[in-house]
Amino acid sequence: MHIANKGVIVTGGASGLGAACVRLLTEAGARTTIIDFNTETGTALANELGEACIFVKTDVTKEEEVQAALQAAHAHSGEINILINCAGIGVAEKILSKRGIHTLASFSKVISVNLIGTFNVIRLASALMAENQPEGEDGERGVIINTASVAAFDGQIGQAAYSASKGGIVGMTLPIARELASLGIRVVTIAPGIFDTPLMAGLPEAARVSLGQQVPFPSRLGRPDEYASLAKHIIENTMLNGETIRLDGAIRMSSH
Ligand SMILES: NC(=O)c1ccc[n+]([C@@H]2O[C@H](COP(=O)([O-])OP(=O)(O)OC[C@H]3O[C@@H](n4cnc5c(N)ncnc54)[C@H](O)[C@@H]3O)[C@@H](O)[C@H]2O)c1
Ligand SMILES: C[C@]12CC(=O)[C@H]3[C@@H](CCC4=CC(=O)CC[C@@]43C)[C@@H]1CC[C@@H]2C(=O)CO
Image (cartoon, rainbow, N blue to C red; front, side):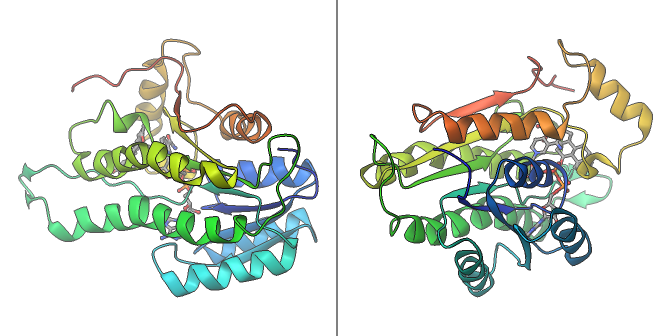
C-alpha cells in the first residue's frame, strides 16, 4: 500500500515505538491520528508535526472512547487505511515473592491493555477499513500492524502477565488475517526485542547497558526509528500477511 495521503491511526503513538511511526508516516505524506491517553505528550507531538497529525485522548480498553477516536480520525483523514497498535504497558511481578502472591488485578490490567485493547481497536478499525474502495491490482483496503514482544516466546521471570498478553497478540494474528483476507485487509505483528524507549526509563543505566550487551548483533538497544522502518516496509510490501516478525538483533532472552 502506498502511504502518501493515507489515513493512519497509531495507538500508543504519543511515545516510543508508536511516536516513531507517527513521525515517519506523517513525513511520508500520511494523515495521522495519535490515539493515546497521555495528553501532554500526544498534544506536543501533534503540534510539532502540524496539520497532518491530530491527537485524540483515548484509552484503548474503552469501547466508546475508541469509537469516538476512530470517528475523529475518519473525519481528519477521510479514510482509515492503516492501523498500528503500539499502546501497551509492562509489569514485572512474580507468582510468589516476598511481596506476596501475584495479584489478579495486575494480571488483568496487563491483559486488558495489551491484548484486549489491541483487539478492541482492531475490531472497530477493520469495520471502517472494510468501507474503503479496493486499491491497486490486489484490491487492498487496509493494513493492521500489532506489537507483541520477544517475551511472547522467551518470557522472563516476573513476566507471566506480559508474556501472556503478547502471546495472545501473536496467537490472534493469523486467524484475524484469515478472516479479513477476503476484504483485502492484511494483519502483521512485530515482536520487538529490547528498544530504547520511555518504557525502559525506569531501569537504571547499568541495567539498560547490560540488556543491550545481551543482544548478539548489533549489541545495543534497538532504536524506535528501526521499529518504524519495519512498520513502513510492512505497509508497502503487500505479500507480508498473517505473520509475526521478530525485530531483536537475534536476542533470545535467557532463563534468569
Ligand atoms: N521498549 C521495548 O523494549 C519493547 C519491547 C517489546 C515490546 N514493546 C511493546 O511496544 C509497545 C510500545 O512500547 P514503548 O516501548 O514505545 O512504550 P512507551 O511507554 O514509550 O509507549 C507506550 C504508549 O502507550 C500508551 N498507552 C498505555 N496504555 C494505554 C491505553 N490503555 N490506552 C491508550 N494508550 C495507552 C502510553 O501512554 C504510551 O504513550 C508496547 O506494546 C510494548 O509492550 C516494547
Ligand atoms: C520491555 C520489556 C518488558 C517490560 O515491560 C519491562 C522492560 C524492562 C523494564 C521494566 C521494568 C519493570 O519493572 C516493568 C516491566 C518493564 C517495563 C523489558 C525490557 C525488554 C522487555 C520486552 O518486552 C522484550 O521484548
